[in-house]
Image 1 (spheres, rainbow, N blue to C red):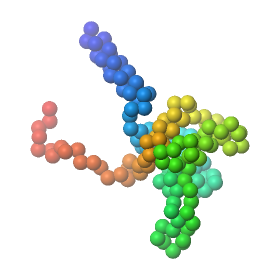
Image 2 (image 1 turned 180 degrees about the horizontal axis):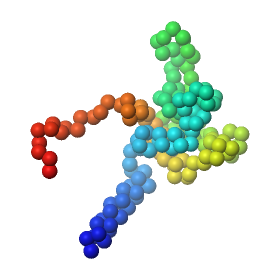
Image 3 (image 1 turned 90 degrees about the vertical axis):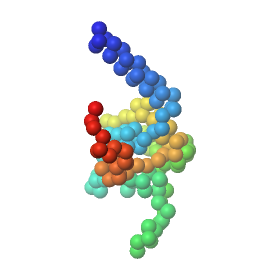
Image 4 (image 1 turned 135 degrees about the vertical axis):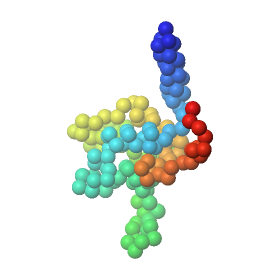
Length: 156
């Protein structure tokens, strides 16, 4: 009986969480929600490996997603480069345009990759861009947040 009660509560809580996410009320996190989609479907050609990178585009960096303003203060005087995400405007974002196009030559990911985004993944990408397309660095390089736990309190 106890197991049945616990399972019922878990289903109720997970159902509430999924319905909130489905309604678009949850803030989308790049690291939690978007990075896994891009990693599974896009990073092979648009990730950190310079030997496999296509079109000089990286989707794992802020600059690749949102573009650059030109020279970064170094001596290279690099020109500005547009990103594939227009914050707050999914329909103006090249990322969404290439994912949704019916043109087989332009569609991403390419058919021959064997990868295909689900409707839910595409909607999540759109919601993330609508919410501003906030980029987060890789979790290993993001400073930890203070948990407020001092270590002086006994464990319960």
